[in-house]
Length: 316
Image (cartoon, rainbow, N blue to C red; front, side):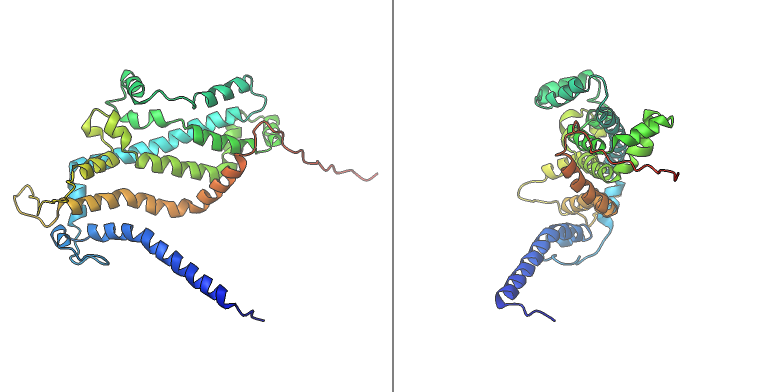
């Protein structure tokens, strides 16, 4: 039997759906606007009136973006730095989290205190730059990889996850002759796929969008990542949006793209990798965030509840 809804509930549902629809449109439209602007000729876009669909469709903006040696090099640097940061960062975080999740580790209390205590203070930009300079990283590609290998937040999430894995699994593996590396790679990591996917997104998105490191600590412009190049392109645009009517190619022919249309194409190039990759990791990401938030509240020093062991008794 269908229950008849009251008038007030119908009004509430209509208001709720309308509000959510408007919120979704307001959230999605800026992305859509940049997308159609990147596929529209720059000169035509300057005339205005391009809101829903490209009026003068073209791929010239993307062609010029990929042909620009500066943009191409910066994309290669960003891709390399992101992949290396994810792989090496997960390895370092997993090793540290596994070691400090073992209750019988000698000196565990001191190391926990040392790791937590150092996160309270920060030296500031100038001392940090001096350390990077002394390590010869300010003119190196490894500036984008080595300083970010360890993240205290990622360490806490993974350590909390490892601490909830029953210690009986580790003890059983040790009795079978497994070493710590085998236990970590064959037991702990497979049981932590959701949180590892979450950390992969955290590290990858953070490194891909990091323009600050290149802008303030990198001394070689040729080693700027894509985010830093985009930030400099946007900062060089005038506040009054006085865009050049066109640019000339090496042959001297005037083209139909503008600096603004090139910026839109570059923004989409930086955004699309995250948009494409996220759906494949979404279920692990959501599960990892939920599991990580729940397990972070559990102290790693709290003993796990013992599970009763049922012994089979042979009939007499």
